[in-house]
Amino acid sequence: RAIRLAAKLGFDIDPASAEPIARLAPLLSESAPARLFEELLKLFLSGNAVASFEGLERFGLLPAILPETAAALASNRSGALRGMLLEGLRGTDTRVANEEPVSPAFLFALLLWPAYCRALIGLQAQGMNAEEAQRRAADRVTLHQLGTVALPRRFSLPMQEIWLLQSRFSSRQRKRVTRLLAHPRFRAAYDFLLLRLTASSEHAEDVEFWREAQTQSNEELSAALGVAPPRDAFADDDAAPPKRRRRRRRPDTSPAPAAE
Image 1 (cartoon, rainbow, N blue to C red):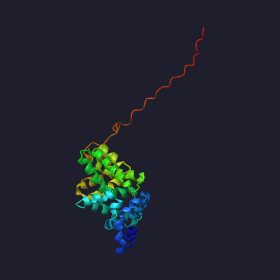
Image 2 (image 1 turned 180 degrees about the horizontal axis):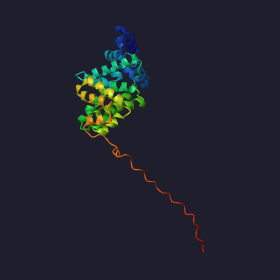
Image 3 (image 1 turned 30 degrees about the horizontal axis):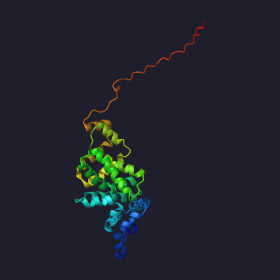
Image 4 (image 1 turned 180 degrees about the vertical axis):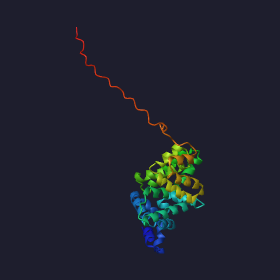
C-alpha cells in the first residue's frame, strides 16, 4: 500500500519507513491470495502502473508478489522483457488516463509473460514439442502464481489464451488465418503481439501482415497469402439447382381384409 500511495501521490518514502519493507516482504506470503489480487489491481489500474512496478522492484517486493516474473527478469540479461513489460504498463496508464477499460486478463498476461517465456524455454530444452511445451508452461506459471495471488478463472483462462495464440501469428495458411481472425481473443492477442515488437524486431513482419489482414477483403487476403480465393460452388451459375421435393406417401386407407 505504501508503494501504491507513493506512486499515486509522487512522494518519496522516508528511509526509516522504507528500511523494513524488503526485510518484511516474506510476510506477504501469509496474506490471503484473494486480498493480494485486489491490491495488485489497485496498484496497476490506478493510472500509475509504471511507477508502482518500479517501486516494487526498488523496495524488494517483486519477488514476494510475482516470484516467477522476478526470477525471469533477473535472468534476462538483455533487459528486453523488462522493457516490454514497462511499455505495456505505460499503455495501461494511458488507457486509465483516457478512461478506457483495461482487462485484468491482459494485465496479468503482461506481468507474467517473462515467467511464461522462461518456463517455455526450459520445457523446450527438455525436448518437448512446441505446442505441448506452450500449454505446460502456461499451466505451470498460472499454478505457481496462484500460490501467491488468486487469479480467478475468468481472468486466468483468457490470459493463457493470449499467450497460446502468439505462436499462431506466424501461420500463413488460409484456414488458420481465418480462424484466428475470428477468435474472440484475437484483438487482445494482437495488441500483445504489438508489445512483443518492442522487445524484438523479429515480430515486425507478423505485425504488418495481421494489421493488414484485419481490413482486407477475402480476395485481398487470398492474394496476400498467394492462394485462390474461396468460391461458391454455384457462383458461375444463374441460380443454384432447385432442391427436389420428396413426395409424401399417402396413407393406405383401404380396409383391412376380414379375418377368416
